[in-house]
Length: 230
Image 1: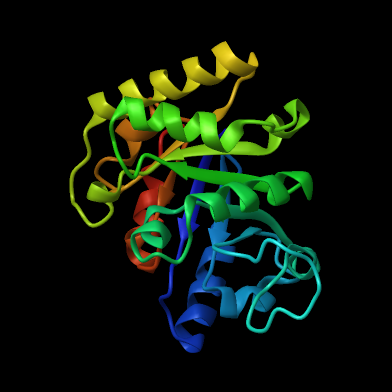
Image 2: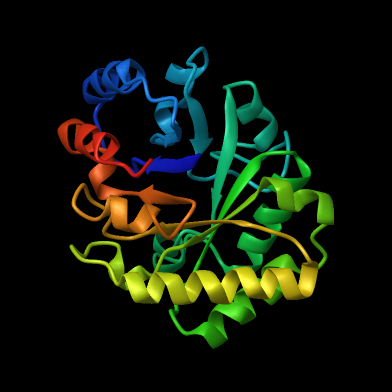
């Protein structure tokens, strides 16, 4: 089964979100694992939803005197089962450091969330291997079942085209590295410029996609899902 992750980022008004929610919940596609990452302000709207819900961000520590932060324990009560860690936009905006990403990764996996780790802000294979080595050192082997690796090059986030050859090469690089060093399989997804015209091609060589900008347009989203690869 292919995974479609919808990263709404910091978009949509409350009314737009309610319309979006109703449309998304009306889409019945048992062949896809659809995961919604709404604006964190709207997570409570999905507490009773049958959709798979994730958070775009969270604080590394549990309940405490951390003004303005949201902890993983609180998110569990809101039907959140997925987390997104290391998105290149947060690195670019200096909202996260590599150290904070590693800490969030550990805490998310240890709290039994399905954790989407973004890598590839720097697209070189050398840097990707450094990221994998840094982030995954000391990860418990049992945690790999909940780990999803998202290759999301920053240069492609707002672009309109994808490089399928590059995606295949990065998939091979990442999966071989994890197999060699951990003897584990990993779910590999791609993010960056995913649209209704290229989603089939991308899904034919990956386990799923992470969709940002195009996830907030309901018509585009329906076209994406209707045109997905089986």
